Length: 388
Ligand code: GDD
Ligand code: MN
Image: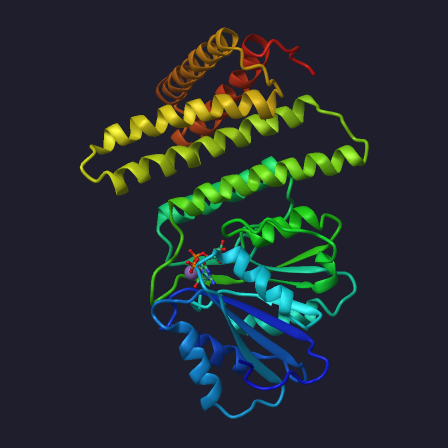
């Protein structure tokens, strides 16, 4: 299966997960070869999930057709079924022999020209993880729809608020790390978010973000779908539980007003994602459903899931005695609807009477109603002291 034996002492292993990338894979392999830093022994591992379009076979053929490169070997792992992006990355990491691991997509969205810089930064003892970042100064995205940009921002917000991650682009699929950083850790590898899981679990690692421009693929299709969104939420939940356990071990139990507010806000954002996922699921799957009905279902589902999440997560209330829980549910729905009305009224007053710019008014109104929503639910629905 191997193109050639790994030269002794591989330094860098580049992992490329693929699923139906026959139009991209050879281009990216060539681009990697052209951009590799000099005098670095590199191994590229393609992890293919039995792509129906023959991506894996293409790589095999390519490996046979090209001459042996001096410092670069290519190999491909054929997995039997499509088991997801993160698990493909993990598979690659397991067999990687390099001390520096790089992960990148195969669809040319991630420029191989950034490799030398990333690999170089990891030579520095100061850095353990390098993230190619769209959200630091100088980074950008080309070719994504507004919807996709919004989803990416929302996912980033949830990670930062819900999990306390400080990296600006924890959703990046383009990153590198020193292999020892993940030693002894075990991973869930759900869905797309391998980097996020590494950032949460290797929490003392130091991270450098290097800006780059993400260019949407020219060929083939993105594999992101509603399932990826739900997988993401599942992954965040598991990581939250994980962080809590880890904290317990360290004997830190303080649950403050601020951390509850943070959870309340990130559940608000999760609610938006669920709302979005459910409505698009309904318009995608049940195609003759009127979109407004789909939206109403989306709102109902997300408000209910917001309730349950806030009950068990934010306020750590596990009492599901039917009568008690339904009263709480009704209060929660009532206060949320009131909050929405108050928000509308505030925007109206600020814009129409105080001549404020709409975006500023909106931000003010959302912030105020979210805060009062939080405080009121804390006090009235979940019967806690306000400042606790
Ligand atoms: N082996 C395997 N198995 N590979 C997969 C699978 C899978 O189930 N799903 C996706 N891939 C591969 C694709 O073939 C591609 O090389 C890469 O993973 C990324 O998939 P895309 O479908 O192109 O993802 P995207 O462009 O929507 O999102 C990417 O960019 C985001 C922003 O940086 C991903 O890298 C995300 O993780 C990232 O957040
Ligand atoms: Mn892509």
